[in-house]
Image (cartoon, rainbow, N blue to C red; front, top):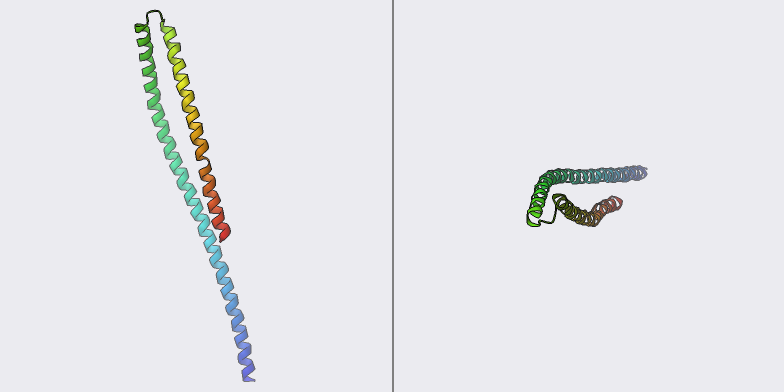
Amino acid sequence: MAISRTSEMDGGESERTVTSLITGLLGDAQRLLGQEVELVKSEVRGEAQLLLRSGVLLLVSGCFILGFVVLLSLMLVSVIHEMAPGVSEWQGYGLVALTNAALAGLSIWAAKCSIAHDVSRPRKFLGTASKEIDRV
């Protein structure tokens, strides 16, 4: 009888041990999943902050460039009017405005190409993060 009680006690303890192991594994998996989600959130926050800083710097740079372009355009109109006697001041303004419009169009086209190329980067990042979460 003493032997059967010991074997019954071992069976109960092993069930508790297996149950506690499974509970521990599930707890660890939940904790790891939570940590992965927090990591993804912090990486996305970091990317957003970097994007905001870059946007502010781009805006400030754009203001300086705008002032430069205006002054340069006025100077070019004056030079065209002085160097080409047959060209009126208004024609000089038109010529400079047309040149500025062409340069702006080229800049917009280059920006679109750059953005189209960089759009795939966040998708790759999010795809990698979701694969990591699925793996867990």
